[in-house]
Length: 272
Image (cartoon, rainbow, N blue to C red; front, side, top):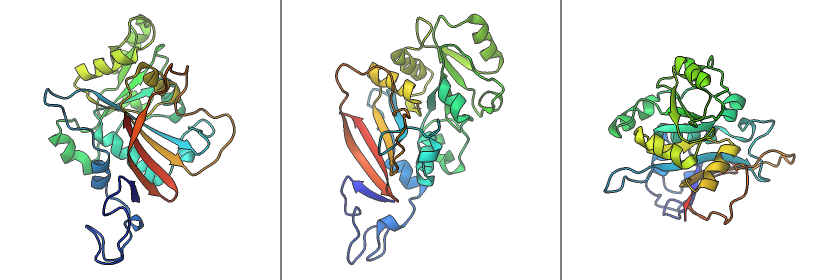
């Protein structure tokens, strides 16, 4: 792993004398970054003086030709390092927000406690693992999945006030906590962020899928995008990382970090 941006004295190897943490003539790209280094590279912004405010980041992967999936799943276009970053981003978050269709397609499981992050999470006032919050209008979910039968912390379901009462009751009977985040059948992204913040979840992470990310982009609530660019070409008609209607004015983000390993680019953008 090596850092391409921002440029620092460790971005490129030195001919002699070395740099912090590397031997003389060593190449910082020739070693695997520790989880602590990854956590520092992807740290959430420090809380404002008036107290923490919600910060929503997305973590997605895309091929060079824009495919967010291959054969309906993201795993084939990912890599081991991408999955280490995936785990690190989860370990930093209070809650992981995901669409119901992604839960079904990807076989979502509850987040697990990571011993490597236990001390940092405790110091940050976080529980042992982030909650999973499923965005679902119809609540057509399989409550026999581990996401509902054996989560370390109760799974949340974000839905609208007009959701079918019997399905709400079924979700609650299964142990999920139903959170109303919209006046109609669907979920209002702005309300969803506010509702999660009211539960004490201000470090927000979404892993999609594309439909949900498109809704968050359109609502203007996305603060940050962590995008892995896979050195693959897939062609076909796979979804992009964000779907749905286009926004009236394209959203501008600025690059704040760029890492590279084995041709994979791990970028981090924030709202400009």
